[in-house]
Amino acid sequence: MRLSQGLNYPLGLDISDLSLKFVQLDEIKNSISLKSFGRIDLPNNLIEGGVINDEKAVISAMAELLKNKNLSGSGKIEVTACLPETKTFVKLIEVENGLNDLADMVRAETEKYIPISLKDMYLDWQTIKNLPDKKLILVGAAPRNIVDQYVRVLKGANFSISSLEIESTAICRGLLETESPWYGGAYDRNYCLIDFGAKRSSLIIYSKNTIALSVSLPISGEAVTADIAKTLELDRPQAEKAKVVCGLDKSKAKGIISDILAKKIDELILRIKEALSFFNENYSERGKVDEIILCGGGANIKKLDTIISEAVTVKTTIGNAFTNIKMPDEKTGDKSPLISQSAGLTYVTAIGLALRSIFLEKIN
Image 1 (cartoon, rainbow, N blue to C red):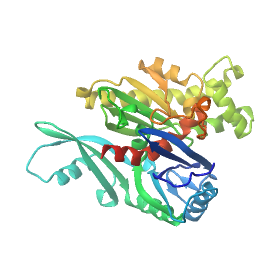
Image 2: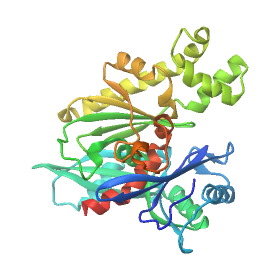
Image 3: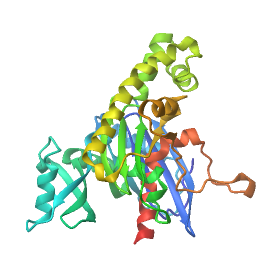
Image 4: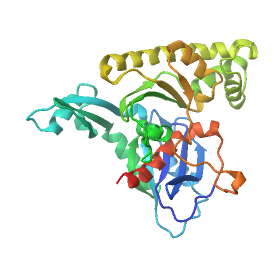
């Protein structure tokens, strides 16, 4: 897929353990359109748990991903990239109003939740709401060595870095219309977003227009695919297809795939219940979660949304990766690049990253 000439906004670049994905968006008259997208798979162990083991190889992969670029001029490509969810921290905290320096109070409160010294972390925060006796503050933190490594690799790939962003923030922006600067409705709903990645998955609780918390989950699409391949003696592509087609339907493949998935799903449901319980106990004034939204490649598993909904008694839906962008209409002759809804679920993070600069421009 070629990049369009004359980039007006930074690319969104999703860096994960097994792939690199980019999305290019443009905005004209308050309408955001998909201009280009692309993906390249990475060998195993090149990136593990968000840590880049071979920087030169990842730099080469980034060049390969964009090798068909068709840009005017010879300048660097501006990019907004994500930091790995498993290595970052984001949480809504409360800080009492007082005479002490606010920054010191935020650091002191944040230290209660992070097992790493803040001296080894980059810390960012913003006030979400001022109350008579306290402030609600959204805190984000990432290890210095991880951030420095990602900066080094992106610069090595000749990118100009617009920003590095915690992945959960990009996912929310990609899935929720309340994140859009053109949204005119009420900010009164709570969402639980679950991103099923190939090597890692995460759960985000988004409450009334801000992230409340984010946690990692013990399930990955690649592990499930490997179990199916081993049990049924299939190669990886066949096992991946079987996982999506058969899913949790016991009537297919003699229920073997359903049984393999069920073990992982039971553990997933337990963690979802724990997260919802924690939210209800610690953020009771914000109400209960109204809806669970699934994204990532694993969200395409047949009947997964139904199983989760029945188990936790919360409405569960498959996310729409195109919530905040305009998809091309072939009937009108729109020639924008097409991407399917199922494939779009794997691009949610990249879309959210690409939306960042557009949304900030409109807000400011």
